Figure 1 (cartoon, rainbow, N blue to C red):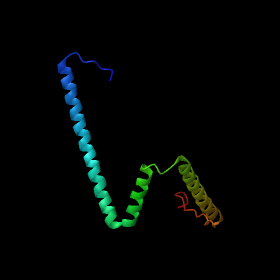
Figure 2 (figure 1 turned 90 degrees about the vertical axis):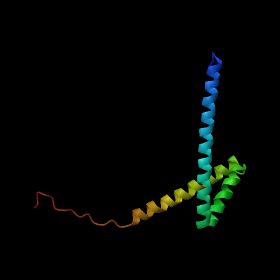
Figure 3 (figure 1 turned 60 degrees about the vertical axis):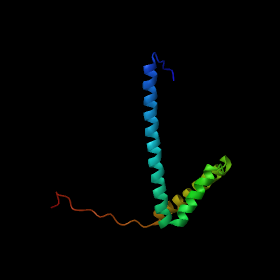
Figure 4 (figure 1 turned 135 degrees about the vertical axis):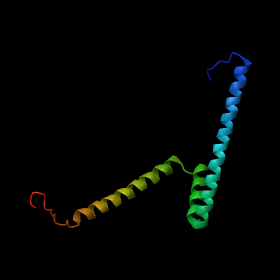
Length: 110
C-alpha cells in the first residue's frame, strides 16, 4: 500500500503481478471447492445422516445461530462431561488391582 510507482511501466508490471496472483487464488479456491464437493458426496453416500447433520450444523453456525451465551453453555457442558469421564476413568484405575512386579534376570545373574 505504501509503495509509489515512478512510471507507467511499473504500474503495468504491478497490474500483471496482481492478475497472476488473482488467477492463482481463483485456482486454489476452485481446487478447494472440488475437494469439499467430492468429500461431501463420498460421505453422503457412506454416512448420509451424519453428513446431513454436519452440514446442517455448519449452516446453523454460519447463519449466526450460535450466540455467545449458547457457545459458552456448550463449552461448559462439554467440559463438565469430559471432567466426569476423566474422573470415572481415574477412579476405575485407582481401584483396579495392580499386577505384581516381576523382575527379569539381569546379565550379572546369568
